Image 1 (cartoon, rainbow, N blue to C red):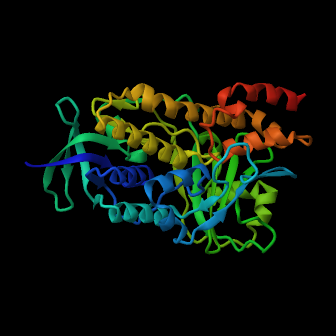
Image 2: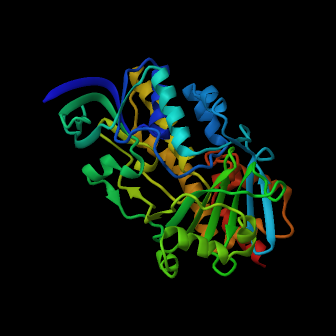
Image 3: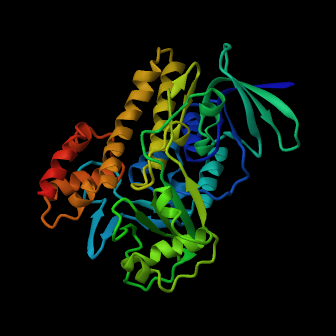
Length: 408
């Protein structure tokens, strides 16, 4: 078998892998990316958070993203029954970006991968990793090329950015059950035909089912008159509806009057898809000369659009740790990578848990709100889940107290 060598091998050319590649190329590292699919390819998770813009800057990709013409985003709107509220991410507790984009991921991911190539990383599409060995002095992977031939790549360090493919967790048996209940989603892209003024296209819209507090919808507008429309619920709720995925999604939307009115003229021209049991976890985010990035390590839930931001944060932390190692420092990957990443993930987890229990919904729809607490919440919704100056990041349990006050 042919054997190749590189400094940093990245499995997966999605957001985590491409941004990590950009950061590492800025360090002068030799980077090879192995990607199973041919880009552009469909992916879900289209609403970015402002915190992610910092990492695009760090990777040198900001201009590429800005010039791609994606839909501007400055906040999030929420609707439950006839109650509505909205958060402007520019009015937040934490410093940093307050705006970002809503993106069609096929285009967005391709923009990032091309930016990584432009920065000097090598990207190989339609190459599939089928085996991994991390026991030797260097991690190695066996790869099947598009023509069916096989070769091996040995690297100084291996980053798994394979997303829901979860290559290393599967091959190295690192997967562990998620603490979240099993949920599923139906989703599609539609020509929305929403009337001008009926909808703030600069914000993601999150709608709650009128009878089921744990069933919610996303409506993510794009810059071309289309939007991503999806619903998230327990599988037993989704299975109550007859028909295919599109018919089920439309039937659930029809049960939610505000959303049904908004999409009254929509053209449902793309078959809906289904994803069930998406929450994931692993026993460790790192090992001997390897680390897991983004969804390859852990995925919580799509309700606050945290996936891409967590992916970018993991890329930034890993690139910084690798830079210190290259400078001769000893890096403790648990202390310097896994623990810092987990702090923000745990903040998001507290808010996700509270959302499905209904407590956080009581908070954001409360008729009398503290302006300062709103700014703290807006910061977390904008992705600043690692800002320890924010009391709700430093002590996520404060949210329980706030829930009790709003429920009183």
